[in-house]
Length: 345
Image 1 (cartoon, rainbow, N blue to C red):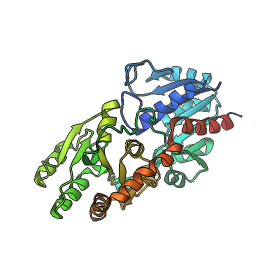
Image 2: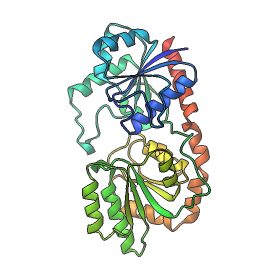
Image 3: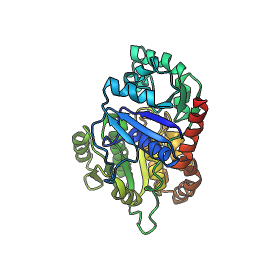
Image 4: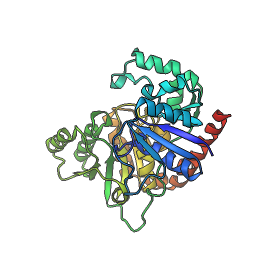
């Protein structure tokens, strides 16, 4: 048994890919018989999304004294992304430090990244004292430090094909409604398809600050009869909705570090159309097609090709089972535990 302290700035009830990943890993490490404690800055309780108690301790907003005590307790200190605020106890307690690099240390220029910020520079120095895991090839190349590439898991006990649900709707977007997710561009592509005589429907699942703007653009482009804002969805309801759709579109403007949402769509029988920058292409694999970030014409063409080529759509779906194997929760957890055991020696 290994005592693993997992630090994650965000955790449930915050909802997002990073939060989901760390919760999945904590559950799997616990299931494999290890002692797990999670520290986070996200307020909340010990109850998960299913109304059950977490099978591991979740310590929220710990005091410096409590954090120091927890680091003394653990055999391995695991960071979900390098967290400077939580790293200081390692100056006193020398413990194996493992960092799961799930995003860029220095943000790409396309979202206003600061390549000279002191925090980013400090992180690049401190990383050299850690054992690093990267979630995609792109993150590993960006890191400029040796790392083991382990792709993200998805909740394979939840996301699945439900055969009795018919795929009656063409497109679905799932994610936060913020500018860098590219939903505005997706609406423009939908309008172009309409000009070409095609009127596919789009379901938008999620919420965010851009929602009023996106609703207005939907009306301005005369797409109100094709676009449906469904709000945030989780759990079994989300799985059922995804099963009703043929193609998931992930038109991110920035370079996604990975893209668990693609795995969730693939698991529910969707082909994927996603932007090719960053690690999203790793998540999509042979289960969809990619296009250059921000290229509306290329996105429109990709959507048109899949809509008019059912054989290509079927091929994407047939590739799903083999593609998803290495993303199963247990397989990903085993890969992490191999790195943890090696770092502990």
